[in-house]
Image (cartoon, rainbow, N blue to C red; front, side, top):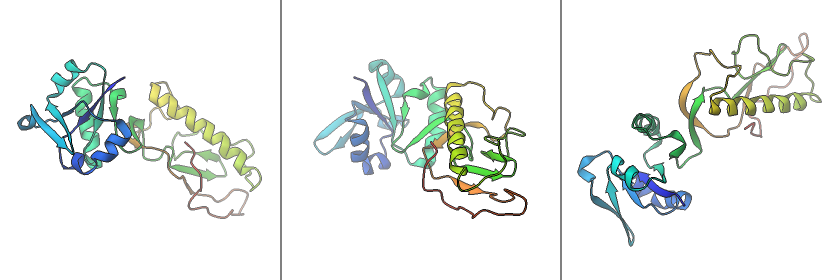
Length: 209
């Protein structure tokens, strides 16, 4: 069984400790970048665990899994720091449903539907998903959306594994903390067939990922 390590022995860890323990289990120790806290202890309820330097913790618990306890605004910077220190990103975990991987602000959160077809954003240029008929109706649109879902899930998996995708070359594609499944926003739902316009859908009641 892996050793659960909480990274960050600060106020947010204290405030949300019960949530972290519920999700990750009891920690064997804490790690903190503040050298003033090293070799002191983190006390909670009747529990007490040591606060250790990162290098000591990794050596002492080689089967470690690191859970970041900081506020959301700090997680990306801390994740990048830990990766620079040699921590594999697969061993870094978060309270909320986020993951560190290649991605962008649109992929999985936006669908553009127009007379060209269905695509995830204004990129990739010329690569339109599920544009067989170029005529969408309330009857066939769910079928094309399911095809888009398959393309999206395949693309996300390739990004996780470092394989080539249709998104390669896009300036928006970068390593970042990406939120988990979200509702998808439709835009540009117009010019589907001549001048006819389908009803605008602002908030889609299902997840694509």
